[in-house]
Every structure is written in structure tokens, then in C-alpha cells.
Amino acid sequence: MKMKIEAPPHIKNLTPYVPGKPVQEVERELGLTNTVKMASNENPFGPSPKALEAGRRFLDNVHIYPEGSGLYLCQALSRHYGVAQDQVILGNGSVELIEIAAKALLVPGTNVVMSHGSFTMYRIATLAMNAEAREIPMANRTHDLEAMAKAVDSKTKMVLVANPNNPTGTYNSAATVEKLLEAVPDDVLVVIDEAYKEFVKAPDYRSADCLLGRHSNLLVLGTFAKAYGLAGLRVGYGFGHKELIAILHKARSPFNTSSIAQVAAIAALEDGDFVKMVAESNDREMKRVCAALSGMGFSFTPSVTNFLLVDVPMASSECYRKLLMEGVIIRPMEGWGFPNSIRVTLFTKEGNDRFLKALAKVTGR
Image (cartoon, rainbow, N blue to C red):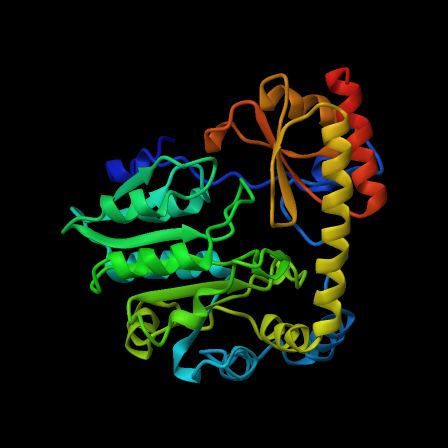
């Protein structure tokens, strides 16, 4: 039987987001064991034990709908970051908040300014609303915020900035982010996506939440998926002007974050020692892995995150396949505009050594 439902052209022509393959699927397909997944920027230490315990304690209540707006987690985020409670909104991952903003603000004929070579969901969320994705070339694999500001016109509804950026691992300084906000009209929403902020040690970087009092058109996003190790629970958050948050709530689905995600995130937020341990381990391994790659003759983009964009002497898809056969899962970057680069998430020392040894073998270094 032929399905006769027709999607409109702007949906039919979309290329969907392709996530990294789960370890279990790779091992089943290829007959491998002891595979290390370094493709999805996940936390190799898992979540805080306190977050796990909080989630387990709540299991008996999963027959009850969660608090609709995530009141208690919003209160915890308000206390932790010093923002008003009515300036906080939760998402099923921070990516849902990008989709909510797109639903709330975009109509056909409008556009969104973003960087080429950034998180692909920015483009997908924009095109799904039949708006134009206006992608601006990077400068040295970093968002060119000055060029992005100049690309804004009367049809622009949003500017999307990943800071730090995925997949390059680069960042924009606090001063350049503030210049962008000063240059963009007040009726254009500027979204600063800070999914990797907990890893950044650069002295000229700081969260854009410090600018909320001066810019009513600012939305700052964060997530519990990376440093907090709660990727599987899908919980992100956004900070903005209370009137902006009220608009976004109108386009938000009810109960969009689960009860277990909310209670686990509250416990994770309170475990600062765990996040500090994760960040410090990442910093040590980043220095060690970068030194090893340099010693092997590889070039890479200096990163302030928990992953590296590494240039390889072959197509990234070929390198991906060869590393897969060695039991190492990385991410090929053709789809992001880096045909000879792979993205690798830092792991534990043992996992990183597995990657370095496998990379040397498949490239003959």
C-alpha cells in the first residue's frame, strides 16, 4: 500500500539530524566487544551519584504527571545562577528550547542568522518552520560575530550562537558577545547556547547570563547533558527576560521535562564537587591528548570543551569506518562542512589511549 500523505516541500527537503550510533548497535552489527564510544560528547564518568540516588527515590511516583513548568528545578536554577525564577524555562534538552523559540517567533519569509559549521539542529529547527537559515562563514573555525551582526536585516527574527561551538570546540570572548548584542536590534532574539560552559577555563570567557539585565532580547541556554552527565534524561534550561520567557511558555508542550529528570537535575546541580572533578579530569586529558596528537603530526582545532576536531589524512567517513573496526566510535564531520576532520569526545585515560593507538594504526602515523 502506498502512503498518500504529502509533506510540504520545506519538510520533505529537510535532512534529519543523525545521532551517533549506540555502542550496543555497533557491537551487534560488527561483532565487536569492549567498544569505546567517543562520538556524542557524553560524560565518561556518568552522572553524580547524588543525581542517581535522587532519581531512584522518585521511581515510585512515575505514575503521576510531573510539575508542569518544573517549578522546583526552576527554583534551584534561580538560586544557583542568581536569576529571577520567572526568567527560567526548562526544555527536553536545551535543543527543545531552540525549537520552542522557532515555533514562537518564525513564520515563512523570516530568517535566522547562524554560523556555518555549527550545531545542525539550528538549521533544522529554522527550516522546519519554513524560514530561511542564513549561515555565515566562520573565521578560523570560530563564529564571526561581526559578520553575523551585519547579516541581520528587517526579516531576521533570531541570531543563534553556540558558545563554545560544537563541533569546532572554539569560543567567542565575553567582549565580542556583548558587542554582538549591542549591534543587533532589540526586536531580534539573540540565543547564546552554552552547552559546554562548565568546561571552559579561558579567562576572557564568561556566561552571557551576566548580560540579561541589559538586554531583553537575550536567551541563554544551558544543559545537564554534558558536564552533569544526564544526557539520557534530556533536561536543559534557558534564562531570559520574564516577558520573553512568558512568550516561550505559550509554545512549550506541557510536562516537557520528566519528574525523574527534574529531581535528578536538582541533585546534580547541588553536587559541585562532582562537576569540578569532571572539568579537571577533562582539562588534564585535553592537554595530554593534544600533546600526543601533535607528537604524531596531527593538526587539530584548540578546544575549550570536552571534544576535539582533529584533521585526518583521508575522508572523515573513511577514518570513521576504519576506527570503528578498531572498536572506537568517533564522529565524521562531512555534514558540518569539515570533510577531512573527525570529532572525538575525550574519555577516561584508558579510552583516550585506545583512540590514540587506533588513530595511529589506521593513518599509518
